[in-house]
Image (cartoon, rainbow, N blue to C red; front, side, top):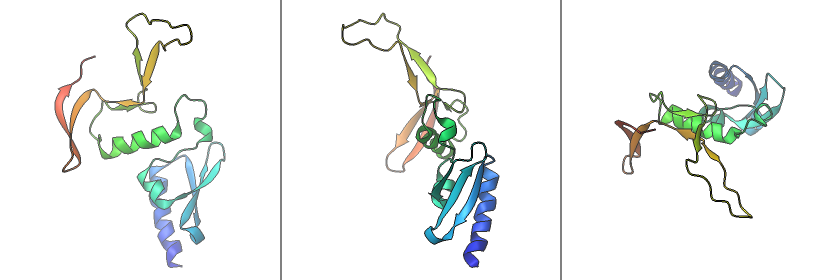
Length: 145
C-alpha cells in the first residue's frame, strides 16, 4: 500500500507537468505506463525518465521534420542549462534556425550540396563552459547574425 501512496504523489507531480499525457502505475517493474490523450498511443517508461526528460508521443511527432529524442534532449538543456536564456530556440520553441548557403554551390555530377541547413538548437548568447565545475557562464555578448 505504501508504494501506491508514493505513486499517487508522483502521479500528481507528473499531471502538473504534462497536460496531454495519462499515467498508470506498473508496480511490478517500477515503471509507469504513459498514454497520449490525443491519439491513444501507450508505452512504458521509468519514473526517472518522466521527471528528467520531456515526455511526448512519438506517433504525434511523426513527419514533423525533427525527432522526439531531439526534443527531449533540447528541452532538458533548456530547463537545466539555459533557463533564463530567452533566445534559446529549437523546433518546438520558436523554430529551428535555417542557414542558407550564400555562395553558389559548386555542382559535382554525382553530388549536389544542400541549399540550406537546419540547426537543431541555438542561442544568440555566447557561453563559456568550465570543465572543472561543469557549468555554463553567459558572457553577455550576442553572436552576430
